[in-house]
Amino acid sequence: MNKNQYLKALKNNDIDITYISDCVKGGELNFIDAHDIWKEWGEWLDKSMEKGVGTMQQSADFDSWFTAVDDINSDVISNQGNLYTWGSPNADKVFTHIESHHSIIVYGTAGSGKTTFTTDVAWKCSQLGNDVLYVSIEMNADTLLTSFGRKAAAITKAQWREKHLISQAQKDIYHATKKKFTENKKLELFGLKAGESNCITHVLDIAEAKNPNLILIDNMGLLSFSGEMEKDERLDEAISRYCQLWTNQKNIPVIMIHHVNKSGKMAGSQKIKNNSDGVFFCERNMDANEKDPLEKKKFIVVEEKDRDFGEFGINTFIFDKGTFRDMDSSESQAGFD
Image (cartoon, rainbow, N blue to C red):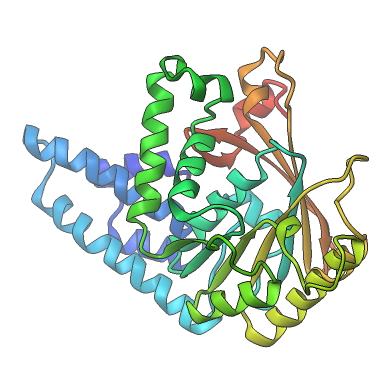
């Protein structure tokens, strides 16, 4: 069943908490979808109780269900290690699972959406119980919040300059995004202070002291390794190699955001790929004249390297209401593939 079908069944009392718990435990329902269902069901129950439609049993189930699901989540984490997600059910099927020893590169052209995508992954991983640390080499926490909100709402430079051009829907997404990051105690936004060392060893020392389960670094191109090394391919190679050794020793996965060079390939030495457990390329239609609204929302992620299994995957997301979701069958049938 999909989320809407679970919701309908809950509203009709066709399923109960035991069935939901079994679905989560059996892997038929993931924790992110369970959280979304719980939230939407709660909103429906509030309105229903006011109208005298919802039952007291449903209200009791609502209060106890999420606790039960959360307990299952904790049990799985304690038995199998930390759970991570690539942000959608299909992506988690086609991409190699994030493991505790992984050093991962996510790259793409400027404006492709790679930062928005990785912050979405960070937030969703935190919803699975992980303590996530997002490190920016050039922005403080407040600036990051503004940037995340603006990108989630797809607010353009012209709109940001002339704020009356921003639609109400965009304003709602902007404020909702900032609020969800501000209120999320499992996800910390951290920016280096002015003049602070941007050496990868220093950054990871700071990160380790905060005891996270997942680290994201934005971005690799702003990191250094030693004051003596010039900014060339050897630097990127040294940074990626150090990060790989660090994750293997500390068992804390690291995702680094990276860029492309003028030829459209990943910036720096191709040895960066050799030093990484996973490499993912992000792209979207950046044609300003594109008229198809669905085409504008399409976001493609290609898994270019998978050290663990040697298998490669591709997933087409839809960027919708400030988050990434899988493309559904109706969109595929409309030629949106």
